[in-house]
Length: 610
Image (cartoon, rainbow, N blue to C red; front, side, top):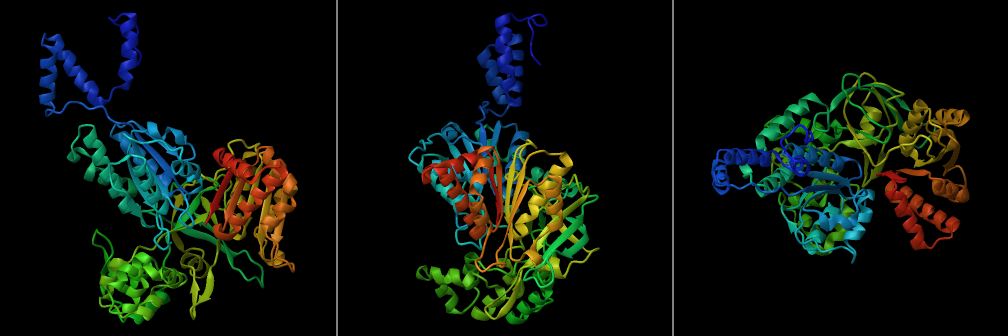
């Protein structure tokens, strides 16, 4: 509400000053000012009035709250969701908060920040996520400014089964300190079960922020905030409270004779209030194979009926059930090896942790599970119940959604490749993918939640051209894209590059693509089936064959999407795009890299890779 000269006892200059001041005041400042003016109106001296008011408020003068800036580097959306929660909670506490994705924030403005909360994941072999690359490079360059007066805290997300666990968060934390920023709360590194440590990190940060603006730590929301969070969790479905979605359909997309098994799964979301957009993922909370759980118990000579405590709330189950439903038993990490080494008399495990054995340790971790560890370095000197205390919970698996909610109300579709392989004398299988392939029938339910991914969205304009590049199950989000564009009546050009092994058996959703091509929704389609010719041909080869047209599309404003395996396919596609830009644009390698960086900053080069 703006004051007016006509409706107030103030002159024009006073009205202007008040209209500038009042909107900037916090609730505490307004209360203080009200008391101060009341005291003045009764004739008391201003200093006495202020002193009396301070005493009434516990003797603490009002302190101008520092502005909080949240920066988030996120790949799958976990970091973004945590940043959203932190922003909402801080605004409830009446902090002035700004929140940016790292690709939306101008790196040169880092020195203007007062209090920085940096939330970031780590991608691949210790690399920053795509939307954090430019900021990461700037901060580690000579152009980075001194950050004296800036306070910060880092929340790092990662996966302890990878060698460079939470590396990006560690790098940011170290670099911010080197630049002179003051660490207001220690960095917290989160594994895949990140909810609890992330919550504790935020509690700690909030206490510091509250103390800075004159509130004691006991004034912070604390337990009451947790109670609200718990109440909210019962009202909506999420990662911590998944929805039991009924399977409507579960079919194999591959033809007879294929080396692969790719499941098309349709789930019923009716009654869940879950919504999603093309580009989002669906999380499934899987179960371990009961046979695997029993083999582990037998190898360790534990009692399958021993009672095990599952969480801080004191819930219990049998050891066997805990290995099926709760604890991860199919992968190893350095963190787990370090803890397990204290539970065995086998000196070989301790030797594997020695500094000069790091290469052998990484070799051992790859492709082995808890049964291998038990057989190789057991027996364990503790009971099964005690051993579970060093295990992490089964992490959810995320799958790119293969449907449009507009085209399929109350449904979500997935494209899941069943993972099966042999290693070290045993047959292995993917925890979730083979559960879906072998132990999930129509009528059964799966616990699911929607994982938002704002880093993989269709252009705002339906007239913008798009180039979609994917191999195998990486085709999933593009099915969602075209269903959405069909529903919206989009006119923009669309080009699909798709690859797999064999045309006859592995052309996923073939009839749908051909129909969209015929109808004009899909403008062009180039396919690469690597096993149908003497020389293996992949999607990047098809891109290079069409490099002139590809570059013309880029120059016309096309948005490029890449979905699939990061280590091989996405890396090769990236190199192909760089080559196309160099050759067709007559640019140097450095200029081509700048071209790619510019595409990223415009959100025209987006990747959903794993």
